[in-house]
Length: 249
Length: 76
Image (cartoon, rainbow over all chains, first blue to last red; front, side, top):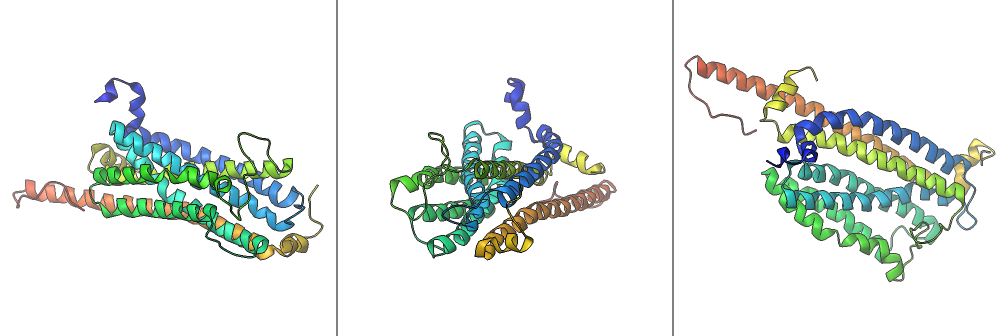
């Protein structure tokens, strides 16, 4: 096995990763709480009223982090899927499976908060434009990934099938991201981008970034929790799980 | 420093209250529910596996005592 050749691969073994993940989870929960309180505090208590949108714009502190996470989690999921296909490491498939439900959650929240934002600002809950439709497709990709994996009994085959779906679906991510540039859409352009200064007040920007960080920490904590459950389930015939459950945990 | 003059003003969100609070409420609910469901699922899985291990140990005990031989492992 490659375990002996490269030390890094040691952490790709569920047996080693399980306790490590367990120790990391409380830290990520703590950070999520701190960033969340700070971000929501700034966003909902301190940030000024938006000149155009009034107070309703405050949905941005929920909508943008949820949308970012829905896209980013998909990229991470596709990365693990590709790693699993390339190196056939057990952990990779488990990571991809652990991320999918959280990604789906954020895709749903992006659409939900988007609808509640769209109604007062655009006068409609939903339009079939490029940004909204491609985000809806992202939600369907997550659901498809979860359903496909659930439909295949053998976990290794489920991982492979899921990985291929995840990799094919990754084409949707740049489509979502650039949709506001490529097509005419009701959705506004990016308020924050890597190439130019953000087009919003500093207080709003900080609130949004802190909320986004909170969602990051939340996603990591939840994904680690879920990957530990998946590990126990999949490795239930191994000695380390038997020994672990024979203990008091 | 605080932007609002009163709690009522804060709750009203400039007549966008239902939209803003509807977003926050659903997001908070789901982000609390997800880890709770995970913890619950984890508890259930651990209980199931422990039961399964005990049953297997008992089966092995029976087999060793001269009972019928059983398939190794469970396919549950």
